[in-house]
Image (cartoon, rainbow, N blue to C red; front, side, top):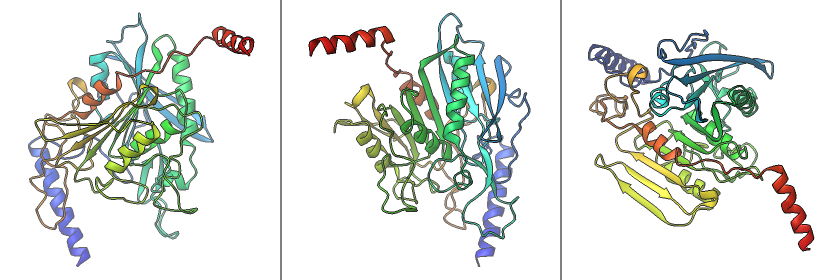
Amino acid sequence: MGFGKNVVSRLTALALRLYSVVIRQPLMNAAPYGFNKGCNEAEDALSKWIQNGSAKQTCIEYDNLKRCWFTFIPDSVNTASKVPLVVHLHGAGGCASLPAMGWGSLAEENGFAVVWPQGTSHQIPFVPDWFPDNILQLNCWNDGSQLFGAEKAGIDDMGFLKTMLQQVLSEEDTVIDRKRVYMSGHSNGAVMAQRFAVQTEGVLAGVLAVGGLVFPNDSCKAEGDRECWKEGQTVPEYNPTPIMIVAGKIDEVSPYDKRRNALSGALPSVEGWAQTNNCSTSVEVKHDKEGHARIVYSGCDNGATVALLSVEDAGHHVFTKGRGQFQISPVNVIARCEFRYLPPPPYEPDCQLSDLDTTSMAWDYLSQFQLPTPSPPEAQHEDKEHEVNQQ
């Protein structure tokens, strides 16, 4: 019975994919995620999307592994002044060479830089030891959720991302404003971006998390507790960080209204961030014409806010089509899901789409924030002397 359902499901998916090719409107694959998907690691892998501006690949050896990223500086960047940087982390099964969240077109339009780093490929956890190693491989990040092979393999993605950022900021010191570095992620990449935010200090001015719902400072009941985001504990030096969380209300991968292992659900996630950033209890709820709700916590420490954008009838998607040379398809990637009730239920394809660009909305949100300017060492020294003299 299960085998028959699986065959029907696959045939249904194939029919929908073929339909998407005919009408030239991809169903999900704005970001072509999948098992055993080799990434294009060539230096010119982004040439399909980038003709205006410089896109360079950088590779280093970190922790005995070759780790790479792409840096994109559009021609629109004004080199007379320093500009923001967005670091985007792909989801599990994604690639740095498939820039699917629309950051490329936004960078061109708004004049900022983008970095796309590459995760590492591992077999998914929870398969038997006898299972062949070259099957069910996923490119992923060690996000601390206990759901991906990078964590099981002990990959130091925190160290890699810190090292990568240090090198990018050093090499592009005349271009990038260190006070305006933001991190974005989808799914596994969204959880990794949140882990980076809570485990660093004074690095990120803001975070976008799409389809990756976790609760910072989650309480672990015991060692190995699977319903716990064990890497979500804030470091002592943590500075409250603005964050926008985007969640599809019919997402079955990182569910909106229920817990899935370390994935907490949407409302617990935004509430956890509000607690972590010491926000006031004031909550602003806005509904746009499509019925999407935005919850905003304000009055947080460090001038931060916490926002949740809930997207009706949307699953585990990247909610943008990109524009210009980065255009992924003529139609956006939000599900209206005409096919949702086709047999065998429940079937959640990434189906026909409405015109909502949450990446653009996130940029409007994130670009309000920047890190405070640190006091110069001389001023800090004078302040300390003044405190001593007062005593």
